[in-house]
Amino acid sequence: MYRQQYAFIGLLTGAAIVLGIAPIILARFIAPKKPGHSKQAPYECGLESTGEPWVQFRVQYYLYALLFVIFDVEVVFIYPWALAWKGLGPVALAEMALFIAILAVGLVYAWKRGVLEWE
Image (tube, rainbow, N blue to C red; front, side, top):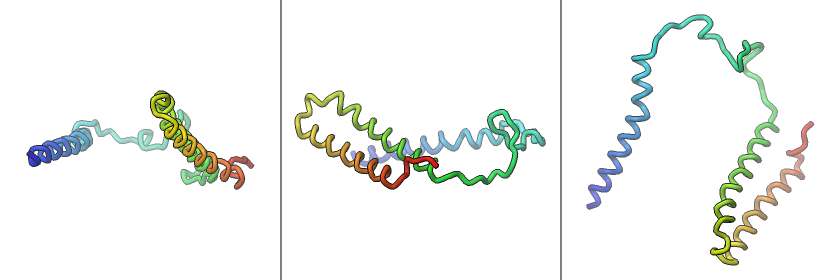
């Protein structure tokens, strides 16, 4: 009985690997190969690139992105809870309050450290 289940999981894993790698290999053989100067040139947003490609970004960009992701994930957890909170009871309300409090402490910490201030 267990062998059939493991065989099915192995079959699905093999299919996932084949379906992931097969298009890459197939494109290598089928895709037209006409390299040229204009095709090899860096291109971004319809404009030709100028300057060095290695530009350092300020750390604040990453911090804003990280804070956005944290609070975006928070919404992913709060939304289903908000739809079912009547049936969950007071314990679930206390747990969600604790969850929001932990994130609020993180936001206050970031605010106090000056992460949210743009120079």
